[in-house]
Length: 120
Image 1 (cartoon, rainbow, N blue to C red):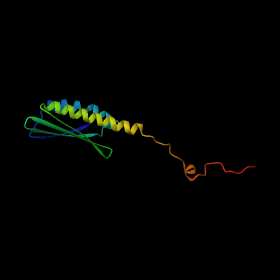
Image 2: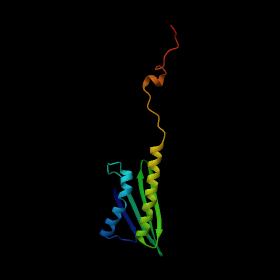
Image 3: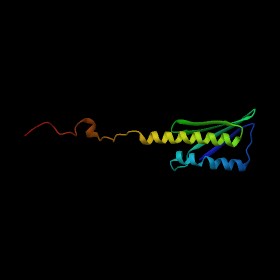
Image 4: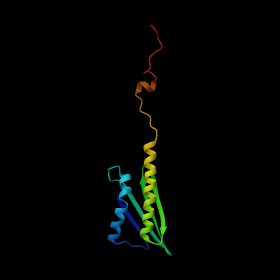
């Protein structure tokens, strides 16, 4: 999973970035489908005594968003990642549990695949 960080009045050290990348690996496994194409955008901001974290992941023409606020920066990021993970699990369950009918071949679509009503 590719993670892009944007900090508004906040800078992250490389060690902090590494910890956060590990945090988003589980969400990446849920959304990647084994191809490594999921991408997350993390926006961090600080306002008075609160740190705000917003994580956005585009997934199949929808955006999954996790937002959280906490006095601790990593507490806010952890809460946002948990919210995002819950959304990803819900989306995957909806897709998995959706009722899907088998595809019909051309004869069945036109009604020609059934026996005729002639008796001999």
